[in-house]
Every structure is written in C-alpha cells, then in structure tokens.
Length: 453
Image 1: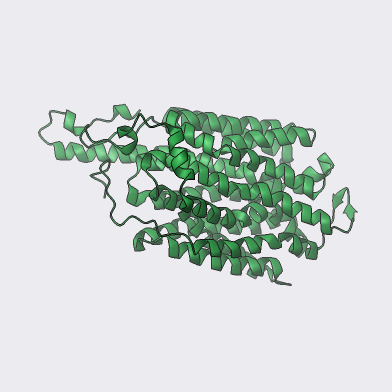
Image 2: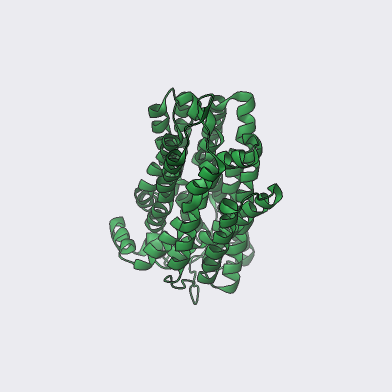
C-alpha cells in the first residue's frame, strides 16, 4: 500500500519542497491509520483477557469449579500469551506485521466463539489458549509498527497511547461486559466479541502495509536493512545475553501483577464481597484502574521523553503503586469513593511500567526490536501465569467451605490474605529498579525520518 505514496525525489516537479511536504503528510496519515489497526487489536484482546473476571460466578456455577480452577482457566490465556512472545517476535522480524497481525486477530476470534460454546473446563481452556495465542501478537506487533512507522522521539508517546487503547478494551470488559451479560448471557456476549474480532481482522488485512517507505536517499538503510544476512536467532542470542534486559523485563513483570491478579480476574469478586454490590457496579469500580492507566501511560511517557529520563519515573511508579495497592488490599472499611480514587491512582502510577518497552528498544539494535520486545513481554506476562492461579489457590486454602447456589463464599479477610502477594511484588519491583541503568539515548539520530518534527 505504501508503494502508492509518491516520493518527491522521483518527480520532475519544479517544486520538490512542496511535494516533499505532501509526501510526509501522506506517510504520517498512513502511519496513524496503521497504528490504529494495531491499537484496536490491543483493545480487542484486552476485552477477551479480562472477560473471566466479569463472568467468574457464572463460570464457577456452569462448569462446577472453585477459585483455583477458575484461576487456572484464566491463566491458560497467559500460558499461550507468554510462551509465544519470543516466537511471535521472531515472526514479526522475519515475516512482517502485515502478515502476522491479521492472522493473530483471527485466532482470537475463533477462540471467542469456541469459548461461547464450551460445555466444560476442558473446552473453555482450549478456547482461552487460542485467544492467548492470538493476543500474543497484539502489543508487540503494535510496537513493531510504531518502531517502523514513527520517529524515535515519538516512540514512547505512541506506546503510551497504545496502552490507552488497551484501557478502553479493558473497561469494556470490566464495566460493560457485565451489563451485556445481564441481558444476553455470557455465551452470547462472547459471540458478540467474536463478531467484532472478525471485522477487525478484515480491516487489518486491507490496511496494514508491508513497509513505511522513506523520503531519504535509497542508499540510506536501517540497521535491519543493512544486515540481511543476520539470522533472527542471533537477535535472540543478543537479547538473552544482556542482563539489563532481564532486569527491565523482571521490573515489568512485577509491576504487571496488580493488573493480572486484580484488574483481570479477582478484583470484581473482591469488591463484590467488600461492598455487597453486584458485579456490574464492581466492574465499574475496577475500570477506574484502566482509566487511570489511560492517563498515566501517555503522561508518564511524555514526561519521560520531555526530561529525557526513564529510570526515575520507573522508580517512582513502584513506590507509589505499592503505597496505593497496600491501601486497597489491607485498609479496613475503606469508603467507596476512596477505593475508586485508589484504583484510579493504581492505574495512573502503572504508567511507569510502560517505559520498560522503551528502555528495551533503546538498549538494543533496531533489527532485534521484535524479538527483544517479545522476550520481555514473555517475562512480563508470566505474572498472569503465576499470580492468577496463586490467588485462586490461596482463596481455596483459606476458604471455610460455605457455598450459595453452588458458588463458594469467601470472607473479606480471605480476599485480603489471598491478594497480599500483589503488594509484595511491587516492593520487590522497587529493589529491581535500583539495578536498572538509564537507557535514554544521549543523542537521537533518525536517518529514516529526516523531516520529522
């Protein structure tokens, strides 16, 4: 698609500056449209990710399971998501986002429909695997598009805006999906999500281009273009061999625990018990996390770019997040308005976690960006693999055995004990940041984007 854009250097016009500006505007418009496809995919997969939290009681009743089994079911998504990050990163580097992203959305769509027809835990688990497998491409695929289509000094901001789209999808999953389920049921609601995924797959197939093109001289090459003989597995070797990448990924993993354990799955049951409210209202409260993230992602990214620092914002986010989630989990009798405010702040302070992807891409050669982000995201998303079942196990461990209509009843004290690992993960994240080096480049050079503002 990008071939239809005219490079002013190849024209015989006597006004190359004017046509050069038109070319740049056209390329920028195309870049925004392609980024929108990737961001909508990220939004869609987030709705699928948090869906079990909204339908927790329905799933436990219909499948005849308790919290630990439900946690394992939720973690099946993360199992596929985390394990496929590196392979997907390799495929993005080798085959291109324009081929991988439409196929990935199709996997999510099929998984959503299969989940809606599941009659037991086994079928639902397979469906969650498919959704996780497709979703594995959403974030790193969009970052790959940002890396190719946007100049370096816009990278952190675009990643933050991508996170904003994710929060919209998460809000739909936590606040709107329970309302939809009350009228349609959880099966029809999942089918509605599947239809939306099919439309998005077609949209991305026709809109995402193979390469961004350039206004620079054809002899100017990116590192990726200049080193075609390098194998993608060599990129993985470089990534694994850098201790800083492991530290940055571990920081991202520990910071993501509140989203995986509270926002994605156990937050709605926790608030339902704490305030004796229905799941729709509890989902609305939980969506405050994502609205906070909606603001925090772009804001922290902008400030980081503005002050040309990554690490100080990462350190601050760990301390502030630990303080807020400590109140959410442990403070007895927290008023509703204070809970909503703390949940919002929890999302706002999560913005520092977004910087780990900028740190990783700034610490490695451009041609390794796909596999590097994939490797980091594999570590980060393992938080869901570990902590969703862990919280479920602790709930069952401290459970007194009470049931109502086949659904286990947990006390608020049981929830507090079970969610305590969330708080301690943030404390550990702070100590990890003490060993992370500043990655912001001293001087950015962008031969691919000489006309960028």
